[in-house]
Amino acid sequence: MMATTLITVAPTGAEVSKRDAPALPVTLDELVVAAKECEAVGASVIHIHIRDDEAKPTLDLGRLKETTRAIREGTGLIVQLSSGGAVTDPEEHRLAVLDAAPDMASCTMGTVNFGDDVFMNRWAFIVELHTRMQSKGIVPEYEIFDLGHLAALERLLNKYGLPAGGHVHVDFVMGVPGGMPGTVEALVACKAALTNLPEGTTFSATGIGRTTLPVLMASLAAGGHLRVGMEDTVTYARSQPVESNAQLVARAASFARLAQRPPMAPADARRLLGIARG
Ligand code: KMH
Ligand code: ZN
Image 1: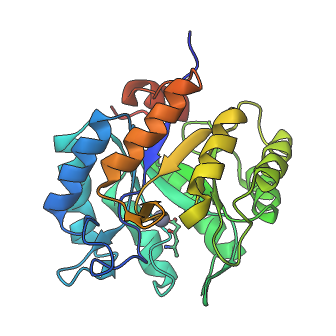
Image 2: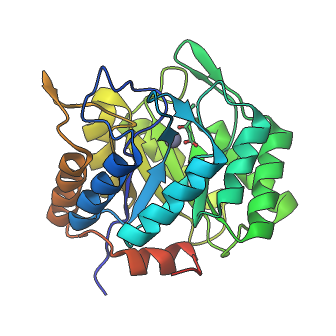
C-alpha cells in the first residue's frame, strides 16, 4: 500500500486575533465551513480551539460540545480538541475539555516559555490529563515544544501505560519563541529521540510563522506527517496574508503528493491513530 500523509488542520488557535487576521474562523459557522473546505482538500484531523461571542478564546464546555457535534455532523474529520487552551486558562478548565467527548485531545508534554508568556504544563497535570484520556477512551496527540518533552513522554508511558487506542502519535510544534527552533536539525533530533518510544510511534510537525515551509518539507522528507493552519501561521508568503485554512491545507497536500505520500483519508487516519469511533 502506498504511504500516505496525515494532515491536521489547526484553523484558529488561541493567540491570533480576528482583527489581525479577518479570515480566521471564530464563529461556529465559520469553523464548520473551514472544516468542510479543509476536508475537501486533504485534511483528516481538525485541532480545535474555540472563541466566544467577542472572538476571545474560551473553553466553555457547552460551546465545545456543540462544536464537536457540528463538526461531526458536517464532516468526517477526526475531532481533536485543544486541552492547551490559552496560556491564561486554569488547569481544571483544561481538564474539563475532555467532557466534550472528542475523538482526540492535545496533551502538551511540558512547560514552555511562550513568547512573553509561559505555557504551564506541570507533571501532575500531564499525568491527570493522560490518565483521564485513558479512562474516557480519548486518543491523545502529545504536543512536543522541546526535545525534553519527548523524555517526559517516555517517562509518562513507562509509568502510566499506553494511551487509549494503544498507538502513540506526537506533534512537534516548532518555532515558538521559547521552544525548539523550526529547523531541519531540531526535527532530526526529535525524530532520533522517538527510538525511545514504543515501536510504531508516529509524528507530525508544524512550524510557527516563517518556519512553516522548512518544517513542512523536513517532516515529509523524514517520513513524518503534517499540521498546518492559521493557529500556526497567518502569512502565506511574504506580504501575502493567508486567505483561508484550506489554502494552507491545499499547499500541504500538494507537497505531500509531490513527495509520493498523498493525503491520508480520515478512515485510514482513524485506523492509524487507534480511534474507535467512526
Ligand atoms: N495556545 C497555546 C498556549 C494545544 O492546543 O494543546 C497552547 C496550544 C497547545 O495551542
Ligand atoms: Zn492548539
